[in-house]
Image (cartoon, rainbow, N blue to C red; front, top):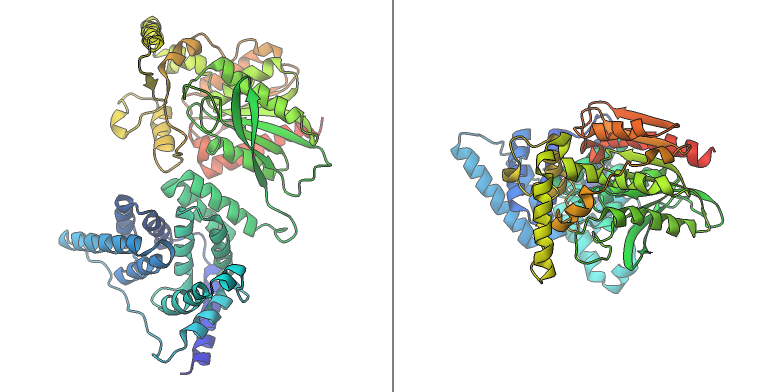
Length: 543
């Protein structure tokens, strides 16, 4: 069979794959396993890879299919990662065999004739997958890399037919997402779309990346998927994010400003400030809601609190409620000076919700306020959850006083943790919020290098004397929206704020949701985003 006939048959196979994929509903267990196997391989996370390999074999991936995925990985993340992954697979298969498990061996690939022109073959496969001939200045600058891509990656590797192109591209985007390489990820997710993956399936892919690999990596993947499925993708530009700074006294606060699609400086837009939870940073749930609301047409600003994340302030990790509250007012200062901002709302998540409300009470530039899983951090540090620490207030203040004296004499700064650092640190009677807090902040679900999970112990004296919801009656007639999960152990904080506020006000329950689940769980984040959009549209746009 000559090369032309082979290519025609391969292209017919691609078309049949696309038709078959379009008929499916959601990713299957093997596809979900490919995502984690490829991403953990690319990141060199051997322990997690071992678990992913076992899951994949249990789901029905054959040994040869899994080998093929790992062989392909060397083209994207290098021989060392691929070899380490293959060694791990070899050990996993042997362990499973010794324990009595029989894994499917699978088929070997059919090889092309030795006289096949792999450069021509690979060029045709790449063109078919991408949809047009690939050119670029880098290939002119270094032609040999283009030759390797065509002859080796798309020729030698992609011609091995014991896994299909869907599997190969799913493995590719998973590795690229794991390494957070946005430009290459965009190109290959577009190929996935051409191969018939639906928007829902690729959104499921981003969810797996977020929950199993990393929050930041999942956010990047989600942004790219949204862009390639945008109806106006060829004429409208994506949400733009700018890194900005503004001062809070002598501290530089760093934020991410999100501008909506088709933003024009000569127009006026409503703006929303989004404050992160205690222990969080702007790249986590605050960034999620900021981006989601920017997609609805708002200008949004998510920022790192003073002393935390990228923002300035020494010593690191101070949790000062006066400064935290002033951060919001200073963010309002910043937005008020922008010529394209017309009305400003604020919202915060967890402790950020309490500080947002405290700031808005006396800042009449704020036209609408919302809290998501809001917590009065002062009351929480003073009383504990449901009053569990009431009896220890004086002894803790004694400890703070002693520590202040130690540090005044040049002693080492003492830190406390927001959530447990490990499963072993979680007390048997710990509230669900702290258990889920460990999962969110200290595992790949949302772990971020600048979210250090510590605050200065001497912050406690300032927090214990603070109450976020004091004088909430002064907020009216400006509106208040409190959003909380019906199963949240922190729900009573939202109820308290609602009870204290004047009209207009609303307490919105997300059924079956916990405190932390409103941070990240896709179905709850979507519901909360839609509620916030309706609320801020009513009070920032329609009024």
